Image 1 (cartoon, helix red, strand yellow):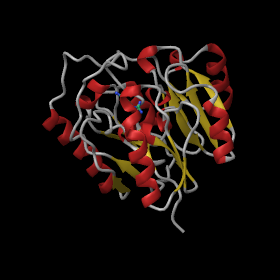
Image 2 (cartoon, rainbow, N blue to C red; image 1 turned 90 degrees about the horizontal axis):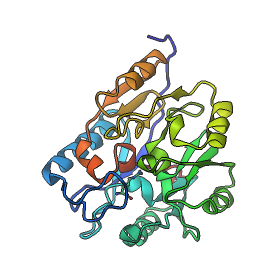
Image 3 (cartoon, rainbow, N blue to C red; image 1 turned 60 degrees about the horizontal axis):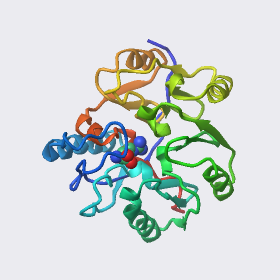
Image 4 (cartoon, rainbow, N blue to C red; image 1 turned 180 degrees about the vertical axis):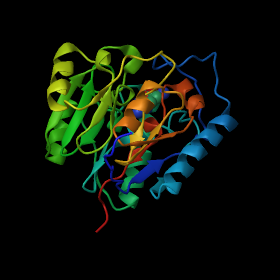
Length: 274
Ligand code: ARG
């Protein structure tokens, strides 16, 4: 056990109840129409995640689920919100385009400055803020050209990272942000130049072997002290403890049937209140 005392930062999250969650398409390798989720179980697991955030003292906002939008529970993909500016997503997959206006309307109604995107990009699924820098994935969903738009909208450095393994099709399935300067990631999910970039920028990162393909191990959220992770991550949990973080296991395995986990169900709302 490390003697490092990690400091918790208050978070404000946006979540969406999986009331209409279903697997009616196969837009990522995790999805199989022959394996439909048990909706009651999905709702209970989602509720446990929601209640965990509240128990840790975070705020959770809710966006209303819309019938027919199976994947709306994965709010991380809806956009990126920093400094009160909400850049919406432009989904690569037609099945999710219908979510776009709901998120923009919600943000406008809650006092955020809304920016409609031009280039294809799937929000925090592929865009992750670490300190002042935005790590940006491309290769499967978001296009490289969206990274310039993101840099312009937020006036921040954007580091492009290329994903190469279709099982880890969004950046947040391969990398998680632990605090302002630390990440955990699966190096094998990235091409070599991106691996080199991450190694130089994050010498103290937790590097994990590519896990069994049914485990969304690093699809986790952190408040700088508590790290919400799936149960049974073994090595990852041990590494977190060793560095002074407090792992909090929450099981959202029913949501894995759609190809998303803890982080995918969680969009961070930064700024927007004076
Ligand atoms: N079925 C969804 C899709 O393929 C899952 C999204 C998971 N979200 C995430 N942030 N990785 O778009």
